[in-house]
Length: 604
Image 1 (cartoon, rainbow, N blue to C red):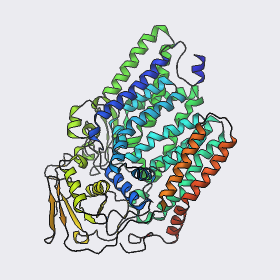
Image 2: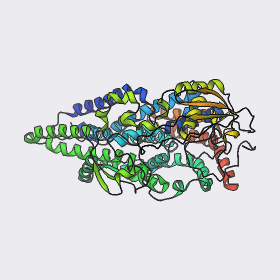
Image 3: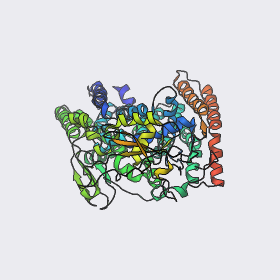
Image 4: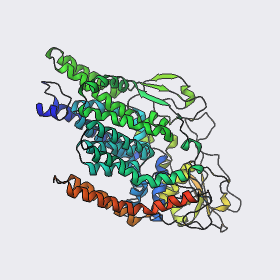
């Protein structure tokens, strides 16, 4: 028992359920893996997957990371400012035969149970098995957190990998911590919470402060060229991407009442115990950096449940520990634990602040209001069914996403889509540009077939000219309009159906849509751009990272080889990213415009 207390476990004296808590935590993670795997045909569950598939395919065609998305929005093109980490990984795997669709589909499934597993492993170290179990259950229940992990792939990857970096810091595997930190910050802007979180936790630990601060800061230095690239193109970004205001869309603020109440219980525990438990504060403080980046609204809607669940698990664990110290209250305490866990699993009451009327509608999850008009602008309390029991719903496997996502966003599972994509591959060739009026379908076509399209689902970059016409493209893809359950009757979710120009020839049609060929030969010199960071450089960066992790985990206590390896690895990564530095510097000297191609030097 003394050894367990020295390891930071939150158990009380005489508690014989230490191993039971660990086994229950492992059982919860295993149950989530099985239940989500049963719904494998439902993945991917949101249109974000189409965009990520398209970017992975674009990187594959270019042979590495590019700064201009030549594969969409023809003939204008647009600057690519999204963090490239996830897409670079998919690009490398594509050369091993893993298609972008398979890659993104797997991640859509893996990041929810993966986040639960990594969070549980980290919390067992810093707060003990009982607090880790309670936090796991609190994290299982919020539907919006489940939706984030299953739908927002890049954002979800941050919460799946960040706990491993925090765990590496606690176990003093600082090379591994630095490698994971670099991966996380390059996945999504939300990942920038991790470096300040590591800084806070290093200062709280008061051990190996210099090494810990280097593990937090050096990866940001390596990622700085891409951030400079984004800054150089800030004049092309939409206002919501460069403003520092906190914008709330869809469901607005969503705070689980039970995790919030349990977080209040953690405050005296943090003050009394301190030590390793202070590591739970660092991530919460680190998320402050996403507010000026324009991602505060997304954090308060989808990500806030993670730090609240971690702190809430500590609060519940400490409360249960007080019951366990008295044999008179021990039975009552165990019954209370079961009741709280059951209440969290079968209902997730939440306090929500809706967007102003007329704002952007939310994803329309089961049991939640479907638009900002449904919520109004005041505080409301909702009690939707929790996520874990909802996975048993058989209709979710028949209809698609079910509780994981709205059906009107589920383009990839619509009837006839496979036949339509196959016809696209059969009738078109690499280099043909397809006019697609529906942005999500355009991203799906690019990601699944590799064909370039006239549209893209993201609107980060402002265009000064009108979009292209069907006559500017080789083919025209028209998708059947579909009535959306989240819109009033008579309004279709997709764009109004267009009529093909008279000269166009129909080459395919099914229940999903039709494909038309332009008999003329439009003039466009669009071709894969040269990669700024090529395939060889990506492989070297991957090799350097894996080597540092293997050396760091090797059971040899010598620090000299680790320091030399860290220096050598840093030089290799810096050399591989030097072209990105030159690209960002050139963009600062000559800021690009929507029509400026910094790579191919030819008109689009």
